[in-house]
Length: 299
Image (cartoon, rainbow, N blue to C red; front, side, top):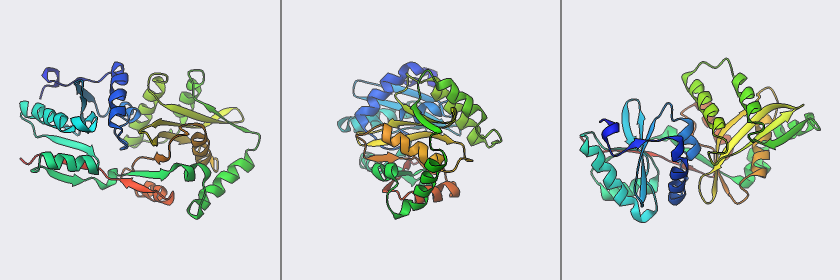
């Protein structure tokens, strides 16, 4: 499939307002259908788009295989978008494949195309939390996290300051990121770091909110998040000095106190199949999981 000759065209920075407008129409809560997530990983997972007045389709590539995300549209245009997506794949003689579909949207595809094969991608499930609990660290299950936060406040009284990330201080955030976990050599962390720099370069262009914490005037932590649906905030990027007790808890609490007051839920994304991350996210007492499905046509 030569994408340069297809209906799909490459996604660029100029497409950010267009894609965000269609994301708002869809009102999805799954973490991959998020404007920051899409652009953070674009170098590793290139994107193409096709749109009409009713819907926008996003085409991705993973390990050499093409797939489509959920159609970005209002519910009444979902079937129309799926059938157009399938027709484009068929036009180029490749199997129709969909990824990052949630339960409800997966069922819509099955009703429309009953012969497809569906696989649940367990390691990709998102963890969703009660925002108020994360903001206040209330409840017995968050006692350990609350102890770390209180220790941070006690040990750093009068020494720390939280402030919004702006064009005036973003270079300090980049300088902090450049030396964060410099020993990391795993491919994932190298790609992630590269993607975070790309997101910081798009401050004022991508619709995200960022917060940093200084200790004795130096940036020691930062967090970037977005409003992913009418009720949900999503934490996209979170970095903190692991040597400072309670700093991870502090940056999250300060962030949730500052931004998205109308949100009631927080999506902290998936655990990437890593056991240590899985245990940490489970310890935060999630309200529910967002399970994701891959859908393929039978050959």
